[in-house]
Image 1 (tube, rainbow, N blue to C red):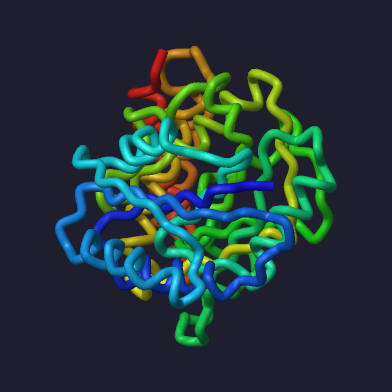
Image 2: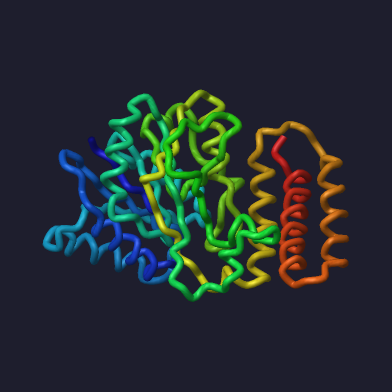
Length: 308
């Protein structure tokens, strides 16, 4: 088996270093060739120098072989699309530049490919990389818990299953795709996705939805695990509100819904959450409904700007 790990990065050389270090620490499966491809998207920091230095010392350090390319057009979708014609191997594994992989990550990808030979896409778990400095509310499971968390999390249990049309939709942070899928599904939407480190997204969800529409088989494999770096800024209320708004906005835009205008139920939700914010009697409850209100505002914006 031969697979390529694809990383798109923008001005995060320190985090990229940690990501690559975690990949090189991971156990390597027998009879499997693994390579790395990094797309440096409009980078103005030391990323280019760092990648050249990696290549220079990779062999003597026993690191995985790496190629990289610069994509000057800002936007993750442009970086992903730049990579598609350069990909080699039968499978492509996506790793974000602010993730670290589990020590069994490489082995479990190979295991999944052998266990589910009919699959054309896999997704695994993404867990917050908690270090004990986070506030208590991020672990709250009560009625006013914040969801989704400001740090990405994709965890649907400890058993593998085929994800059907009504199942969860993974993002691209821990996605593994057969290379020939791109010839059937096409490229990533440049109308969606982040530019730099803003809070947009949706290019990966849009791709997965199009793949499922065309009959590609997606399997959830919980043993394939990545951990998302926890930026303390993400645990502030302003970030929670911005992220909730942007996530809902791009999620609505990515839906395969040809209707126009804003559905009536969204206006009802907007009014309800607004009243709940005003008459809340505790900070936990107020924070919860503020985040919900931001999410609905994002849905309204997404509905008004949906691709028809």
